[in-house]
Structures are given as C-alpha cells and as structure tokens.
Image (cartoon, rainbow, N blue to C red):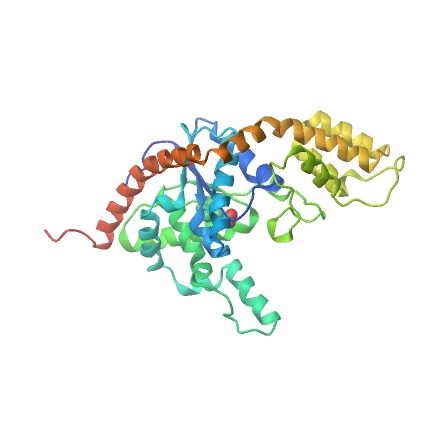
Length: 339
Ligand code: TRP
C-alpha cells in the first residue's frame, strides 16, 4: 500500500442531506478551501451521499442537496485541479473497504458511538424499545466513515467537534486492521477548530439544521436581509450599551469581519448601536462577500451537467487511487486469484 505522494493528505466529507448554510461556510467550507491552497497538503473533499442515506429517506432531498453542496463549494472557489473533489458513491471501493473493516470492528466499539447512543437514549426517554427506528446504517456509520478516511490514507481530518469520536474510531479500526493483516494504513488525526465550528444561529444556539435556526448560505439578497432581521436579540433600545460577546449578531459579524471591523463593531455595541442598524450593517458585510459566489452558485444550479462533469473527473482521479488500494487490501485478506 503506497502513500501515493509525499505530501500530507487532508480529507473531509460533507453529508448531502441539506442546503449549505452560513455555519457550514464559516465552520467547514471556508477553512477547507483556504487550507487547500497550501502546497504542503493534498486535499480530498467529497460529498458523503452514502452518509446522507442514514439521515434521510427522501431521494429528492439527497439528490438536490448533492447538487447544492457541490455547487456551493465550486462557486466559492474550490480549485478542482488541485483538490480531489468527488462524490462518495462514485467510489465503489469504499463499500468493499467498509466490509473489510466491518469484519475487524468489535460490535462493542460501535455500541459506544455517541450518535447511536443518543438515538438509543432518545428511545428510552420516550418509553420506546431501545432499537426503535434505528437502522444498521446508523449503527455502522463510523465504519463507513473510517473507510472514507483510510481509503486515501488521510493524515488529517478536519471535522466538527461532534465528529471527533468517529475519527478516533477510524484510528482504532486502522490500527486493528494493520495488526491483523500487516497493512500500513496511516493513523488519521482529527483537526477540530473549536472557535469556528460554532457559528450561532437565529435563536442564538449553534447554527444547525437540526435546530432549524440556519441562515442558508446563498439566499437571494432580499431573503438574506429578512433572515438576518430574525436573529434573536434582547429588548435594549438604541442608545443603550449592548454586550457584544453575548450577542449572536456580533458573533456572526466577527466570523465575516476582519480584526479592525470587529473592534469597530465592538465599540458600536458598547456605545449603543440599535439592533436594526447592527443587522443592517451585518447584512451588508455578508452580502458583499457572498454576492459573486452567489451568482456562480445559481449559474451552476441551472447547469447541473457542469457539476456532474467536474465530479466525474474527480471520481476518476480518486478511483485511480482507490482501485490500487483495494487491490492491495484484497491480497492482504486472502482474496486473490488462485493461480
Ligand atoms: N460524518 C461526517 C459529518 O456528518 C461527514 C463525513 C462522512 C466525513 N465521511 C467523512 C467527515 C470522512 C470526515 C471524514 O459531518
């Protein structure tokens, strides 16, 4: 199993079960695109559509979200010459690796996965059977994710805090596989950026689709303005000093502003800027940054064949590696020609 190239490899996946929002942008897309410009890494970014099937059984949603997420990354300037950008389901070797890994993964390890445990606890809380509405996809989710990571021997995996345990499990599984079969999977490390991964949403809690408090990334201008106006504030009037650090308006400002703009806004808060005015300025700040990518985004949504073509090229590159990898692994586990 070769290491493809001398560069360190960074890999992350985006589950295609929703519309990209400002939190995804600030927490994942923007830093990933920035990091991918560095020459010291080779980046792999992919659309985790197999993972989407664990979360939703709406074919329309999975399909539309795949287009939206891909279009968003492309519109925001992802350089697909440099980065290997692909759709998980275009790499059938990932399924085969999932099986190989499943056969060395202790069921007990999966019992300890937070996502699964939360689902079980939720059932207990409502007096249901423990297994109610839990599918095997959810149970085996960390193994599929390990296959994503190990397939490309990723060194670093940028993820949100909630995914940290999954990357650690990928590491455990890799270690076990290496031990049993003498393979050389790289042991991946998670990269968690605690500051950025927590953009706050309309209600002040973490911006997340599951809280229904998101601001979609590419809302048309008017709707963006409306949505920003819905960010929850307190009842302080214009002229009354406001605490920037407890305000979602300020926190979102900070995520888009440079250092100087942030300091200026901090002062305005202390001097009592009205909520309406602060939101107006926030809208302008965000809108200026998103205006041209937004145009490219809608252009791509109208021309899905362009997106499809880019993904196919990415898949070809990724498969050149995954085919080689799976060939070595088949051999390692004893699945090979008889003569
Ligand atoms: N499970 C991740 C999430 O929901 C997405 C994902 C799938 C992923 N495969 C991955 C992230 C591999 C990093 C590496 O956010």
